[in-house]
Amino acid sequence: MVVFKVRSSSTQNAEGRQILNYWRAISKYAKSEDEQENKEAFLAKQFSKLHYVDPDSVLSHYLLKKPIKSDIPVTSKPIFPFRYNLSQKAALEQALKSTISIIEGPPGTGKTQTILNILANLAVKQGKKVAVVSGNNAAVLNVQGKMERQGYHFFVASLGNQENKKKFFANLPKWDVSEWSSELSEDELNAKLQDLDQRIQRLMELDREKAKLMEKLSAYLLEQDHCRRSG
Image (cartoon, rainbow, N blue to C red; front, side, top):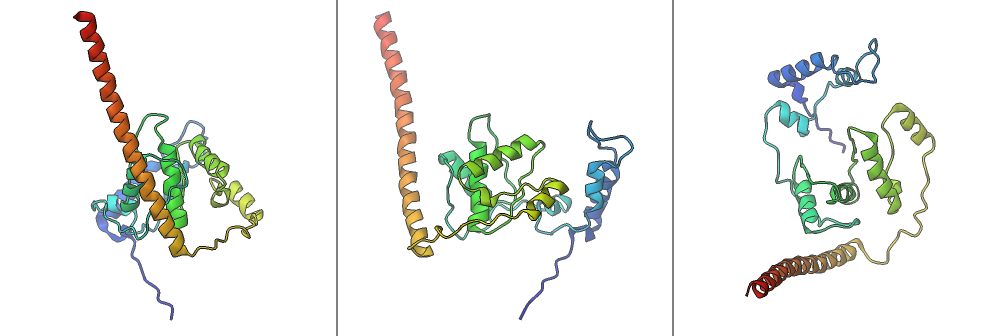
C-alpha cells in the first residue's frame, strides 16, 4: 500500500505570506549590473516561481520565526573521504545535526575541505541530493574540481542554467561500477570505519597536545635565553 502525506505550505500562514509578498514586490528592483534595463530581474523571476515553502526548510523557519533545529538525529557515523582536522570534524558533526550552519575562517583554513566532507556524508551516507550554490561560479567550480580530482566526479552535475541542464541530461554518463563491490558486508565496513575513525581521532588529539607542548617549550627556551643574556 502506498501512503501519501500531504504537507501544507508555510505560505498559508498570514504573517509568512506577508513577508514573502514583500520580498516578491521589491525583487523587481534588485538587478545586477549586467542585467538589461528592459528585462525582468532574475530575482523577480525566481520569486514568481516560489509558490510552495516546505515547512521543514530554513526559509519556513525564517518566515514563521521558528527556532533553528540543532538536534537532528544522526543515525550513522560520518565518513571523511577528504582530509580533515579536529576542528573540521567538529564542524561537520555539528552541520549534520543542524538545520543551518555557518562555517567561517580566513583563506587556507579548510572551509572547502569541510564542505566536501559534508557533501559526501549527505550524498553517500544519507542518500540526499545536495545543491551547491554561491554568489560566483568560481567557488562552485572549485568544489566541483576537487570532487572530480579525488574520483568523485559521478556525484557532480553542473545544473546552474538551462543550457547546462540540457547538456547534462542529453549526455548522461554511464559509469563502470564493476570494481566497486567489496567482500565485506556493510556492517563490517561500518565497523572497520568506526575503528579507523577512533584511531585517527586519538592520533589527532596526540598531535594537538604535542603542538601545545612544543609551544610551551619554545616559550621556556626563549625565557631561558633571555635570562642568560640578562644574567
